[in-house]
Length: 258
Image (cartoon, rainbow, N blue to C red):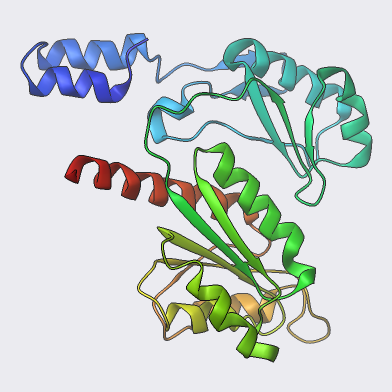
């Protein structure tokens, strides 16, 4: 199966026509197809070709029976599946698939790891406190699943900001930084004001009382006077996937410049 990159290269060099390129993208890559799983799901097996990242299964809210059916279908179609927010009961039901388990991230990975044919970007992951580590790990695992290398530094929040500076020095080669914080959510703003690396802020649902559950952190990041982008509360998957798209694109650009 040709990649989108191969098809576009042939179009640019005149080996195929515009009509041929469109036909190949639609027919060969099957970008408009999906797989029905009984009456419960429609697996988007062309997502990798269309947007650069595969479909990931959110286990939360699914019965174990439905989850197993979805996993079986995705393994048959793609050979690998990534499941996020997996409960202990769901993980037990997946044992016969021999999953790779990331306990803190609550992510199960099943099947053969793909070989990436693109340069790997570098994602830095920083979290303010130990209570934020589970969401940070979700972001890390997702970024690695999407072909990135990662570096991490945990428990460097603003309550002891002297811990941050030596750790930040280790991350200055990253293509993008994921910065997680709960409570007042100050860390992403601080880091975005110290480096030219793009920062993705992740508010975490730590904290209590007025503005708890990540609400104060989310509002603080949205009001940041430093330039950063912000995802939803506890959205480790979204942060990891978005960071991977940025980092891999940056790595590909470097490769072209050589």
